[in-house]
Image (cartoon, rainbow, N blue to C red; front, side, top):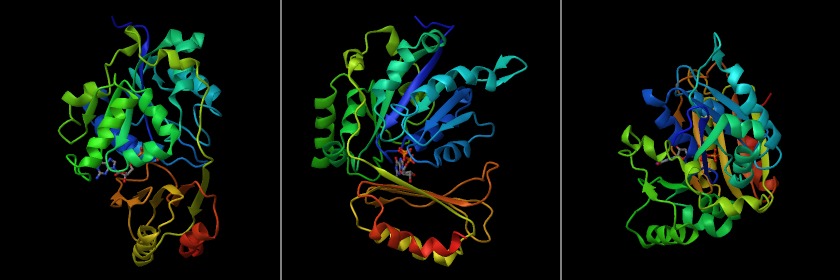
Length: 332
Ligand SMILES: Nc1nc2c(ncn2[C@@H]2O[C@H](COP(=O)(O)OP(=O)(O)OP(=O)(O)O)[C@@H](O)[C@H]2O)c(=O)[nH]1
């Protein structure tokens, strides 16, 4: 039975660059879910996801929690946010949202987040956990599970597993079959769905919402007692460019980013201001894969400056500096 007094919360997780924000953006376009408030958490000092989510909606309800993981440094911030949003997002005393999605950072352990939702007296009285949805990259998922314990935990805690980037991977290949087997080994309880575009529609909304896990006995309940676990240290570097970049310099630098072969680079994301262009362009590299740059609709009221975030496992050394060097003249 749904408790109408408590707002449903979906925890959307998945490793760095797996496709959480892209998925959310597609679903938030549906009229049925426009009354969703999104809390986005980013590991780096500067968060870009609130801009990437917001650019899809006319009246975005997005709260950004950056510079740490919700599972450790920002736990009390999450509690406070869940308390504040009731009045922050009210108009004439009427709350403007009916459900909440928490998009975790790609490095988050979902356990402490669930702990906060289910054990803090105020939070548990006002919210009910709808379910944990974990996005797994079809192309990089298997290697990521081998190398990153955070990704394993995210899969183990899932009530639903959604496979992204099925357009980039051969879903019948042994690698994809291996990924399916590994996901099943780690979590036999969570149904696995391939996220082709057919599912990201109204019928597919049930993959993200209405899971109702708290009304049953979540298979991960015994794991709530486990301490938060992070794998290897990750260094983040954020950069803001003061000057717009001419198209030709942008293309040249993109070629450098495409060719860069340091496996220590886990994630790069940037929103670029191109000289002479009104709208920004988003650039994503996930491990060694550079995705096609995406033009965004607008700047959502933000100052129009390029912002970049880089996450590495090898620190920021000479190689990383060389990669960023061509952008240096646009910093001042
Ligand atoms: N071709 C293709 N690209 C995708 C798909 N899903 C996501 N991407 C691309 O993958 C890149 C990363 O996607 P995001 O949605 O930013 O991933 P994320 O999980 O939110 O990333 P973090 O917040 O850094 O953890 C972007 O360039 C997306 O356009 C997909 O199904 N197919």
